[in-house]
Image (cartoon, rainbow, N blue to C red; front, side, top):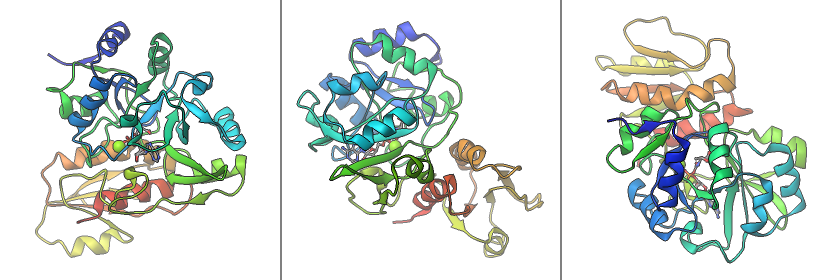
Length: 319
Ligand code: TXA
Ligand code: MG
């Protein structure tokens, strides 16, 4: 029987019983548990096979709930919350002592956001506790943007995927921390740097590719298909190097018009928003086709194009 269901009351019962539920957000599906339940949080790490050094994002029903979680909110964080919440912005703030260490990997900061999805907002409003939720995929693999993606990953591990349809943004939230009360970008994501800078001025960027980084979602290899995946500027040129192979192609807007390959065009009209929303679903689809290689096209390096390139780079980085 499918674990996908729209039953919010069931999700409330499960979460209250320290169980996990996959929840829809505007970015990707999250694997959620009660922030204050050690059992649930440990279950999140074991289900994802996620290392304990990688902290979780706490999801709140609204900005009012922030005071229960954090010790200090810089002025620019208040401004960003007022502008972008609910929405795909995660902020890393000084935590208060109610937040368990396992959530924050022992750090004195906690990542928080108010997701912009009607089903999950309703769920959060009805629950007496916030939800910790990493993306609902095994550590390192492609994030889920549809209930069916989560079901495939975790049907033997969890009892419910709360069905909220396909994720509108399709790429994880942008993560901003604060150093000396000034914003620092830790992870590129669904909210562009340009949009953030329009509100708070220049933001410095620490979105590095590392083996053991400060924000571990920044691991060099992450979001990766199991098929060998490449990121190139000139797809047509690259194809010539793979004669005789079964090739999958992922391009931004212009088709190569060659029927000998499996090709996905992310946005015929050239919309970065549309391309981002289809990115992971398309990678899932190509990865399912037992190809020898997936060749992806580098995006224009501005706005959401930057975030898409970041994910493609991590998907294609080989150790
Ligand atoms: O869009 C999203 O953010 C999704 C949905 C479900 O909300 N969640 C998500 O969670 O992408 P996850 O666990 O896959 O990525 C969370 C990232 C990790 O890179 C983690 O290292 C970083 O947030 N993070 C969490 N707490 C942090 C902290 N205190 N300091 C620095 N980075 C932190
Ligand atoms: Mg993730």
